[in-house]
Amino acid sequence: DAKTTQPPSMDCAEGRAANLPCNHSTISGNEYVYWYRQIHSQGPQYIIHGLKNNETNEMASLIITEDRKSSTLILPHATLRDTAVYYCIVRPSNDYKLSFGAGTTVTVRA
Amino acid sequence: NAGVTQTPKFQVLKTGQSMTLQCAQDMNHNSMYWYRQDPGMGLRLIYYSASEGTTDKGEVPNGYNVSRLNKREFSLRLESAAPSQTSVYFCASSEQGGPYEQYFGPGTRLTVT
Image 1 (spheres, helix red, strand yellow):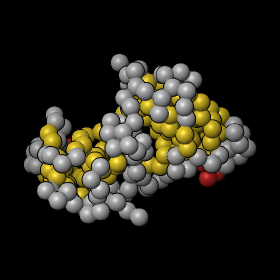
Image 2 (cartoon, helix red, strand yellow):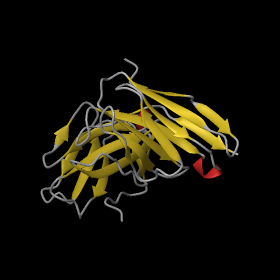
Image 3 (cartoon, one colour):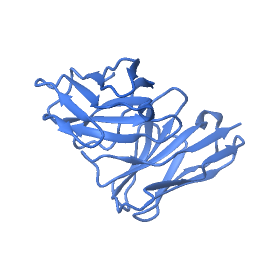
Image 4 (spheres, helix red, strand yellow):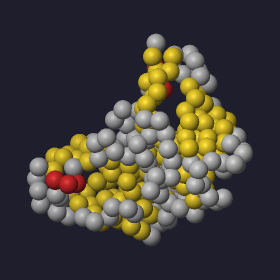
């Protein structure tokens, strides 16, 4: 029972913005949207999370639609080191676990 | 500040052997977690500890036990290893449960033959 839907893969040119979509049409009011990434053979790395409002930090921006049924992670200037699997996760505020799906494999090309 | 550390990095066991995976964090976090990742799959939660002195089962607890030794350390024990437990094991910690980000260790790659 997948809570999120992401494209399996996408390519991005180095130096350009990477826009990663995520569909979460069944999201509930108390569920947050999280983004993590996993660079090959490493532990997952937290990127950003949000509830309703758009969020920005030093790594990325998170844009959540007004109805909260979808979101987009934006990497403003992709580098080769951003090549990774990106996971969009929906999680209730009182839940401990992160449920990782298949994610999107992002390949940044020179 | 090392974050989350795990030992060992690699381990090969024979079926039926036991071992303990160690995890420590130096961020003064209250909550700690153990996940496993099978090839080509996402992570699945094995056990978690919401705070020192408490532990709870996750999605796939069978065949594992855990100990929250103190606030810093959370160990995972395989009493009788099976080939199905061949996986990469990740430990994570967070300030608390709920909407707090989790920080992951580098992983332990375990092969059971």
